[in-house]
Image 1 (tube, protein in one colour):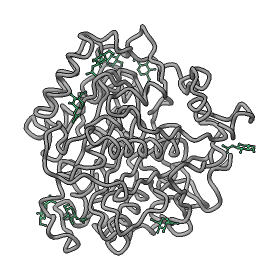
Image 2 (cartoon, protein in one colour; image 1 turned 45 degrees about the horizontal axis):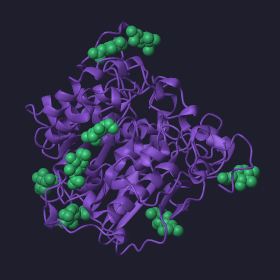
Image 3 (cartoon, protein in one colour; image 1 turned 90 degrees about the vertical axis):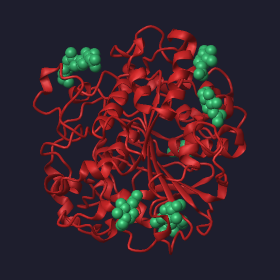
Image 4 (cartoon, rainbow, N blue to C red; image 1 turned 90 degrees about the horizontal axis):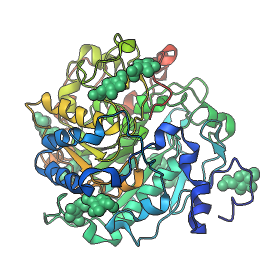
Length: 504
Ligand SMILES: *[C@@H]1O[C@H](CO)[C@@H](O)[C@H](O)[C@H]1NC(C)=O
Ligand SMILES: *[C@@H]1O[C@H](CO)[C@@H](O)[C@H](O)[C@H]1NC(C)=O
Ligand SMILES: *[C@@H]1O[C@H](CO)[C@@H](O)[C@H](O)[C@H]1NC(C)=O
Ligand SMILES: *[C@@H]1O[C@H](CO)[C@@H](O)[C@H](O)[C@H]1NC(C)=O
Ligand SMILES: *[C@@H]1O[C@H](CO)[C@@H](O)[C@H](O)[C@H]1NC(C)=O
Ligand SMILES: *[C@@H]1O[C@H](CO)[C@@H](O)[C@H](O)[C@H]1NC(C)=O
Ligand SMILES: *[C@@H]1O[C@H](CO)[C@@H](O)[C@H](O)[C@H]1NC(C)=O
Ligand SMILES: *[C@@H]1O[C@H](CO)[C@@H](O)[C@H](O)[C@H]1NC(C)=O
């Protein structure tokens, strides 16, 4: 509050608004967003005041595909997005929306100079975290990220990596996950040891066993404005979310997914984190787009059974097949299945191009991964405005239901045993409500990854999940050993992207 109140109007000051504890309209971040992002449906317009939604929430624990179909049949989902009441994002009510996340101290979003379009001027200090600017993800190329301050690596059992949203707001999402962890720790009743509330006998995770990591995927504007320093990685616009090559530092062209691999290799390095046996890669909105796409094309590694992907309300998907639920727009008839909406086309990043071409196991590998789809049952905002996205459905929720149905259709009508879908009643495109929903707290902080148990006893041994079996697929070596082939990656530079402007 103190820092920002007197500075220029370019300062975004959420912190001030929250601490002032008055009506927050002046700092309402929705005021900074395009109109289509804030046109949400109010809960009061939904039939049955949430009764139907609660039934869907519960059904998802036993039959997530039927729940997806039921959500997809809700009357309010059909349109592009409902007009009527605007949903106004409000930090105060978001924070207190859920019964179990009230009365927990809430770390507000840090103030930061600069803007989404003009570039961020600095990565802010945030409460409880430190900014790590020494991690070389490639020679001479540092990836900045937030990490839990003062953690003891010998105690860490679990890492939660959170992706930012379209505004590249790593500081905000990092704080949201810290807040969610506080809820989990402070309100044990928020989570029983099974996701549906029944007990499993698992021990609850303690705070000092969790390492939170918030990578800062910045772009050329942030470099120009100052947030990215000499020697640090940055991408073009929002290309970090689709695995494209970095635009710097210098001529370093490293896929954002290769940077993810480097993080995971580091976390599963038992000399650095001897007790760590689970990593959750999480994201909401554009962050969820990154997580979903990465979960499909990630270079296989021996520890993949211990990695969980938490995907909340993405704007669009990389679809697994070339069929789509909606083919009504002729303007993208020829390219609706191109990367990053499908696995086709010339824009597939170098990171995965060989595996897509020569190794047909992309889909079967994905089916073994621990993937959790999470949807706000009121999130009928359009999100990604590209024609290719409209082929996937009209809005976040519809695309999500249809993606879940499409994944199930590939495996006999049910989701793969390592995958789940959950639907949050009364939640719209609200990052914190999604992350702090009770079932999300379980997924983020407690659940043993479903794929981990099978090979649990062989930890650190051959490390050969079936995902790594394929030969001649551009190297099954760990990401770290291929990390430095910067010359190969650099070839991605002339690739054209087909994203719409409203991508998130
Ligand atoms: C949804 O919101 C309505 C209106 O505030 C409330 O009556 C209902 O209990 C809520 N339902 C759930 C499942 O949270
Ligand atoms: C924003 O910039 C002003 C002027 O340089 C500086 O005084 C202030 O501390 C900055 N605020 C933040 C949150 O970095
Ligand atoms: C920064 O991150 C790297 C990679 O995890 C780690 O090796 C290094 O110790 C971290 N630096 C600090 C100061 O924690
Ligand atoms: C989680 O929330 C749902 C929906 O509000 C509720 O029905 C359920 O009992 C909650 N579970 C736990 C463990 O609190
Ligand atoms: C079809 O896609 C084009 C290109 O994205 C867009 O301008 C147009 O509005 C879309 N048409 C419909 C009916 O959504
Ligand atoms: C199909 O896409 C068009 C835009 O191209 C959109 O107007 C329509 O609502 C969509 N229908 C469904 C069922 O998704
Ligand atoms: C994966 O998780 C299992 C079960 O928690 C554990 O026994 C095993 O050591 C973990 N593997 C790795 C590579 O961390
Ligand atoms: C466990 O290891 C065996 C042998 O390497 C492999 O066939 C199997 O797929 C692995 N299971 C998982 C869940 O990774």
